Image (tube, rainbow, N blue to C red):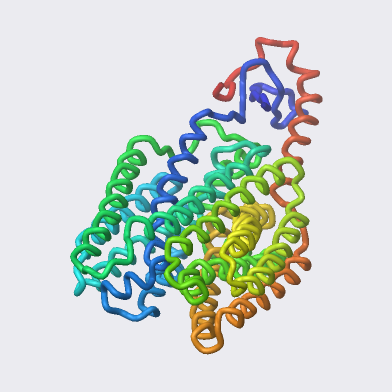
Length: 477
């Protein structure tokens, strides 16, 4: 913890200075930071569950609403499409208005969407359930860019990557539950009234959860700690709001070559994950008919393995700060995992699919927080919401392209060709990652601030600390 104080009436040869004294602080870690990240993870979980709840039982919703598979694919792809135009105003709001407003809007819109779905359980109301899914997709825009911002605002420099991983963990847990629960709650029955009952049960549970989370966020979620957790945040808070320009920030990011390489490579990796997740039911059912529940379990395996990978990578980054090396290694293993998955999917052994899917998920999903944190390092002191927004925008664009492209390839040439299609782009992303220059600006800012404080405190404390009566206007303790 760094301790600082301001001095008045300094001699003429001392313009302004700071010194280490006994009871003042400029950085502090609050225990309630864990409450903030838990709340975020909870509403991210609730929203992510809805993304995949239609796709994983694609054939059942096709039968209930009497629509084709492409219409159900759009229930997932709408999450990607909505993000692209809305991320720009939402990123501006995050930078200008802060975390609390974004959290309130995310949970309110998400809650509204879940109750719209409750009213959509009739065979002729597909447009209503699509409206509810659109609300969920709009809520996601307020969610995806927050993990790195929340971690930077509330957590110390030695735990910021772990905190970001926990934030992403909630989203991944929601996807995992979205793979597992719908096939269990909504069995493939022929009686439409019975099927409507099971669908309504799923929608009511989701709406109840979303409502409780919204209430908790209203009463418990805070904007930021009174005292910043790191010297980098001290520096960020010292910048006057009128000096910040959102458009200028965007332009600086677009001119940042290492970051733009990361934007494209991140989009390729996460876009592949979106495509695999959306089309998983179709791929499994093609080779293993009647295995809807196991398709969900395979999706669960992918995400659970990825959650473990995310936490391990986050802890590893906090310990080693090897952002470039870790990102490249995980990306390369994502490519290898996708190749193995493509060649083993049609072997006729479900246990093999579980194993290869777990390996693929560990690296592909585990890559998500790495991309966020590497981006913050490459772009500091730009707003974390802006850099994360560009990453996610790239992911949504590639997600739509890959989902439609792989779906068409599967329809005409089979699942093997569709998966090889994704392997090609993962290889391209791996090569691009290798060319990213590791310019860790946030780490440099923290080290520079620490060195400046240390050098100034030594020189000034030698003059002033013995004279206790000269110390005044201390920083908040």
